[in-house]
Structure formats: structure tokens, C-alpha cells
Length: 127
Length: 186
Image 1 (cartoon, rainbow over the protein chains, first blue to last red):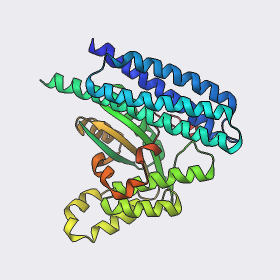
Image 2 (tube, each protein chain N blue to C red):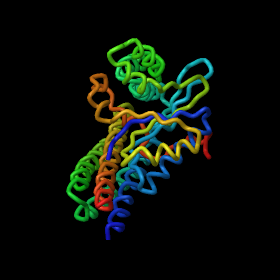
Image 3 (cartoon, rainbow over the protein chains, first blue to last red):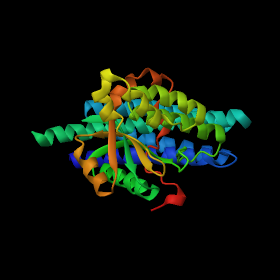
Image 4 (cartoon, chains in turn red, cyan):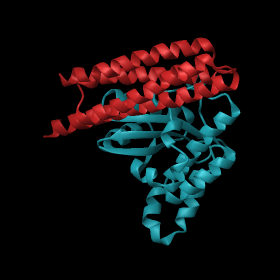
């Protein structure tokens, strides 16, 4: 049971990492990100949010706290990506940078949830 | 569980990327949890270079500032200050080495300094900089030793308390997944 839950959380983390990679790759491209990138980011962020929400109930208290924080960051990813979709020039690139920072924060929170989960499992196995 | 910042020093870039890969493998095995990594090189002229995806000069410099500050902090408490300041001026900065000399003259912290400032990135060497949660030091130390790497740690909470990090969130400059630039792909 706990192995399945852990894998589930690992999947959430992998998708959050992939979201960050998508944004950082497009932001780092010479000439910067383009509008088409934003659409992909919005869809990926939505998918990560859905999987994070789905795994929420299966986590211990500490992991759940981090996952909830990650959800806040993922909402910010969507907000800034939506702003980027409407913006142009420097405002567009600024929104992309904010989107990237939010995505980084979301990966961090999901990773903290993974660490909390692993810590609880290690403690249990030592008893 | 302890959360630590660490530098794993290798004699060459290839070794550093093998170390980076091994670190993420340990994460995949559930033995440690890696929050972020990057690789720093020191060239034969003593200049530091941080591997980053960034192509915009200002943003690449920002990465250099952040990682330079972290590198300095890994050299000891005084290195954190010098590293942050040095990083601001020259990108990846020379925090590691400056931190070493600064700390060694502080008699009151000599014991601490002799441990913390053992970290030196010599010309030609590369280091994996990582933010890791680990149950014990054993898993990483033994795997890195096999690869020829020397591990230096500083606790995450100590670094978060450093006033110098008010303006820098060290983790945000590290990649939260295994990023290996195409030119170094294993």
C-alpha cells in the first residue's frame, strides 16, 4: 500500500520537474519563450495540479502540508502563464520568468513532500 | 533526516557529471531526496563557471551570483559573506578560496574552520553542488568515494540562518532534476 502511495507522489514530483524543464528550456532559448510555449505550460500545470490533488488524501500530515503549498505555487504558475498569454515584449518575458519561479517553488514543495514521506517510512522500518 | 547543502569535488568534469547522475540515482532508489543540483568548474586560470541553461547574460550572471554565494558558504560561515559579495561582482565568484583564507585566521573558530574550509576547488577541478535530504551520510559518501569524489557538507538550516542569504535563495539556482548539458551527456 505504502509503496503505491509513494510511487504516486513520485509521479507528481516527476511531472512537476517536467513542467519546470519545459519552462526553463523555452525561457533559455535564444530569443526567449514564445506564445505556443505558454499554452503547453498551462496544460502541463493543470495536469500536475490534478495529480497532486488526487494524491493529497493518501499522504501523511507533513507531506500533505507540502503538497498543499505546491498547489498554491501551481495556481500561480497558471496565473502567470495566463498573464504571459495576454502580454507581449518585456511584459511577456517577465511573466515567463515569474512562471518559472513558481514552477521551481512547486517542485521544491513536492520534493519536500517526498522527503517527508520517505522520512516517515524510514522511521517506521527502523522500529 | 538531515537536509544538507553539499559540494562533491572531482578532479575532472566527467567525474562530476558521473557524480551528479549517481546522486539522482540514489534519489530514484529512495535512499536520499535531492532538492536540486548543479555543476561548477574552476578553469586553469582560477575562474569559476557554473553550468546553466541560461543564454541571457544577465540571467546567467544571476545564476553565477547565487551559486557563487552557495559555494562560498560551503567553505565556511565567513565564506558565505565573501562568496555572496564576490559572486555579485564576478558571477560565480571566488567564494570557496576566499572563504578558506578568511576562516583560517579566526582562532576562535579554528576547529570548525578546519573542517568546513577543507573544501577547496582547485584549478581544473569540478564540483557537484547539491541540496539533499538524507538519513545518514553513508549512502552518498560511499557512492561518491567509488567515483573519486570528496563530499563536503553544511547543514541547510545553518545556511538559511546566514544573513547573507536573505537576498539569495540558494536552492532556486539549482536544477530540481538531473540536468546535464548536451556537451557533457554521459
